[in-house]
Length: 321
Length: 303
Image 1: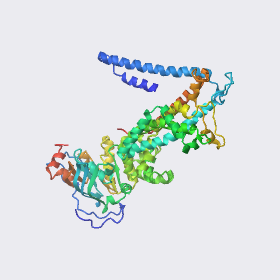
Image 2: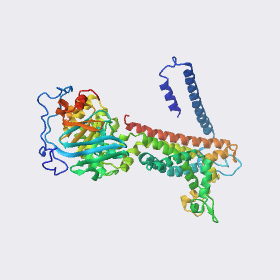
Image 3: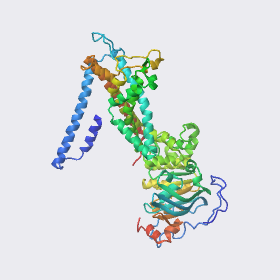
Image 4: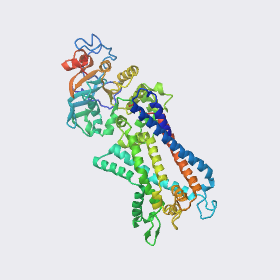
């Protein structure tokens, strides 16, 4: 994001503003100031977290679970939260990515009946606008139902309704609109005659979508997945309400291996940061910084991965419009 | 139009053993062809008379409506193998619509309605499954549009079954090479078959698109202003290629460029506002147009 802003500035600065009217020059000055201000804010956040993170992060925190104790060392690290973040991210994106891509394909390539397409479109927009705490509350209603009891802990006929499954499912709704929007944009940017060129050698719509359109949209799929993942690992409301926000894993006894954890409650890095911050129950700001730094590194790694996909796509080239 | 003396017995026609010409063609070269009364600028015809000509497609009283708008009005035309048919006319005259209806691409536009009949080897094309029809009648578009994959994969995609990835590179190699060769591209790209197709030059991209269209082993090749986005040199190369192809496939080309139509076409159809105004051999249509509107158009009075 930072780099993009700088580049557009350079291009705009080719033409001198000396001949412009006063209002235009003031406008330009405001643009510059705001641009630089936001750069400064972003840089400040990253640099500050880097410094704090490097200062407080101990590698063993990543594999030591949180524990009760009176000293810094006794209270352990945040391995459960770290793994928890990975789990909700995996579950959320595993649900959201195929669904989102499928919805985008249907909207752009088929979109009939038109009324249904319009309804789908506004539904997705509505989901994008719903605060995640509302989704979380709605999730508790759904996942506490007896029919979905197999997705969380059940004791004496009462469904607990809080689990990695429940949180992952609701978090996928947070990521879904971003994926749909990004993939739709990618599909819409492919000229119509490219599709027709494929139909004109006897290919079906399905074959064209699989072999031409989707591979072409790879960068947009990656961008959508990245934005969605960013939202998923950054969400706290759903974690607190639907994951139980315990400090450690609370596996369900008697269930086979991955399901005992996935059906149980847990925590994530965002929740750990919240709890470890001065307002939280743990009040260990140093560990909050360390966990926040790990979160930041994860987001930066995602950004880098998307950049690689985009760069690869650029090597393949695109059509002249 | 005279009826066929004998219908073509096989789908693909061998060059070595051409069917007898079904029609007497006007002498192409020879005495002062070109612009006596029409005012059409003389350009050299790059082709001689066709060796043979066999009717493959028959456009019979075809009209195409987009909603209430009639884009093509009761047009009848033959499409023959051994010849290049050029559709000319000002923008919006329906020539591209007519071309797209030949392989049922118009059906992709929801508002389009076609009436009349189009026959391919005496079979109504609405009775042929669209994907099969479009392998027999392939199309090249105005903008070069190779798929965003390697040169090799662009052709291999056409050769493979629908979305399948099967048929290994090795087995497809001869067919890919021959398609590229027929489009006159093989020598230029043979060392770079793995390079992305979209990094080729515009002219090479368009020839790759022609190679792609030929890889399906079509009987009819449709070209929608294939040179309009290209420089004169690439245009020349593609024109030569089209002329070479006319014996293997029936070629229909839509063009805005009258010189081009004159250079490469054997028959020319002039369309105006959806009507077929005049259909004749290229020399006759440009040299001594029958219709007033044709005369005005080829002399550049409107366009």
